[in-house]
Length: 337
Image (cartoon, rainbow, N blue to C red; front, side):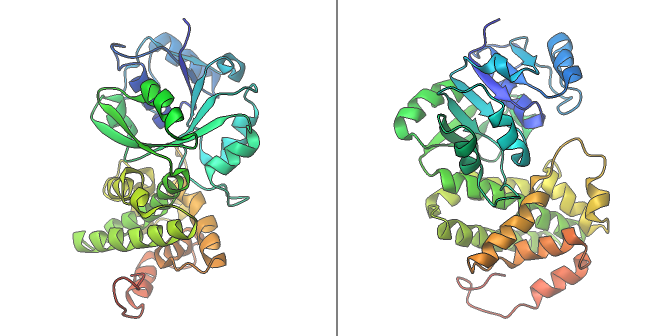
């Protein structure tokens, strides 16, 4: 079988993307996809049983999805979707065979060691690659099931790259929308993960729907402040990869970050809530580096700071919420909460 597109990372999201590109379980209207996984036993399961029991057990994978643990097999593919966790992006991309290709970055996070966004990490690791970012409100199990989904595809190469990639990625139920604001797409995805933890805490404390709605709105204000200071456009952050993704992940236990916050609100420590998990809650790693970047640049992000206090175990959830509620009253457009 000769693949036409590759997906690097066989977690839930990477597997769902491979499935939708392949056309769903019956492979109708899709293409042949090569899916890279680190675990050799997972590669064998995907290839023999057409399922990913470790990360996406609900999906019956198309036979046109083939797995490999050898990055060299992806050398000749013109487009690769990179779906590994943010903190592993640099090492995985550095292991790719060199070549001019489109790399579509699908991880939502900030590199903890350097404070760099994923496009900056990838540009250093693969300077010859043409970079794009895929981001938006996407639960993996819904995408794998073929339910309607819309995303932002932000292309550093402008409309020429969009024309090339949109034909590779678009499917009847998976609709990308064009942007050239790579920074905005990345910031929206990274910040919403942290805010989703905060919304989970609200649910864990049983503070009600009013509180959650307020937190989403004020969290979006923090996202906007940070994004504009970094050169993102407001219209990007109000779109699918910003506000759209924020609303989704702040409202459901299908979000790993929301589930982490829920556990914190119910009294667990971060270590307890994260132990034994196969998947990564990117917001837990992003929160401290995001807070540090905001402090360095003089950007007020009290909700992000509150999440950091919870993750560090500095304050119990109830005390963190009380501190937020005690902030000075201001005009809405100037206040942080």
